[in-house]
Image (cartoon, rainbow, N blue to C red; front, side, top):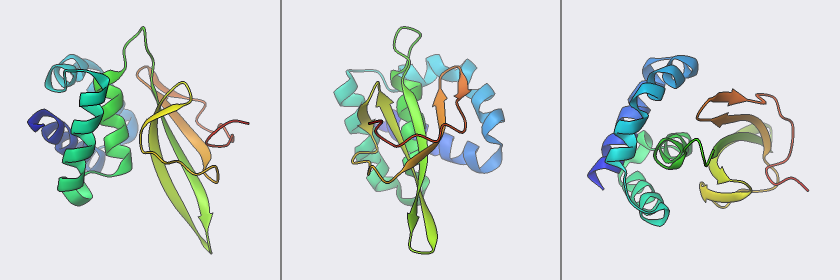
Length: 138
């Protein structure tokens, strides 16, 4: 669990200190370190990220948890996606990020069908940045 907490704090600090593009380039080289810190089965890694995330408060947002999960669990043979979406909330917008394997949500569940996907991130970078699809394609 220490690895999950440390990784979330590092990613949260990096998100606050640099642009998303710079963060993407920086974590590519560090992926083996993150995977070593968060080794174990998918179930164990997801549990560790979720459990430590509850204790980290504002350091562990849905985006931080999804990015950490992607770093730990994604591989060239299994490209997971971080999806970022928005939905209307009265006169404002709510944002949410979640990690998926195909259409199965690993982190960030439950995801309302009201969220419109605005960006999709994989270990190779951002793809379809303005995919205007629903959270769960029909």
